[in-house]
Image 1 (tube, rainbow, N blue to C red):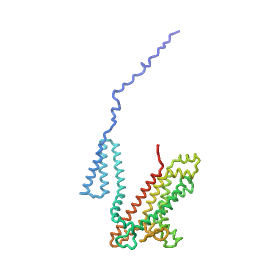
Image 2 (cartoon, rainbow, N blue to C red):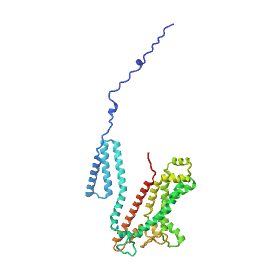
Image 3 (cartoon, rainbow, N blue to C red):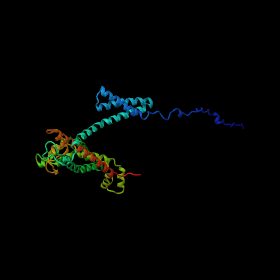
Image 4 (cartoon, one colour):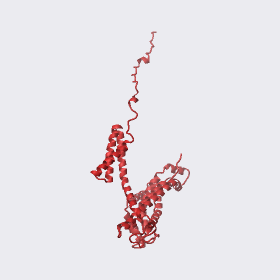
Length: 373
């Protein structure tokens, strides 16, 4: 029997030798930290850019605030982009440039608000005295008088509008989110809410006048008519804001409530509305701020008067928007007392809106669902 060579070549000998790795690590070739501009670079460039633009504006160009802002932003953006591209790389340079662009447009959007606020405060504080808040314009010609009747009329009409609009708006939103289930009626309601959102305010006033003329006859003027007109403007805002807040409530909360045997209406009241109450209050406050300064509907529905009338169901009433409009549009001689009262009424209206927003934030914080670990 022939001998069989069973010698198997050693695997270590047949394998090709692995290439030797270099001693240095490849990570050492890639720097972990790129150089950055110092923290003072951006503020210093901004100051230098503004100084250059201001110097050129005082000597060559104009000193318009909007022009100064845009020119400073362009010069500062070019400088920071170039410096960042040379030191930090193109990616960081683009990030800094986009930051400059976004900040510039934010300041442009904020500029009209600040200018209006400064103008109203500077011209309205002159008549911010006790007489302005405690006297009406009955029998007043020229200096003196106040906006007591207009302030009370605005608060009363706004309160009536809120009482009418908030239940209708919230219940409509609850139906659209919880009950309609994309039904035909739900689609029709959504369509009409969208249409009502874009209705001009004067159209709402004319609608209220035409409606009450059928019952009270021609020439009817009352605070409740103005409240109905403002409700036409307020209801769609309440519906839209409440609807969005209800849709943000997770379905898991509803399903957990149903799994415990809780009825639908109790789930809506105790779970859905309770969870979204903060957003709903904020939406209602925005709706009130939307209608409290309306002038056109109140001109045709409520009119104006120099006496105090606290009954919204009988007779004309004075309101702050209409009071400010007439004081500014039809001043007497001399003009200054009338213009001072107009600016003071505008400032009072702004303060009322700010107070409502603060109250809404407080209510939202108190009734918002508590979160914890």
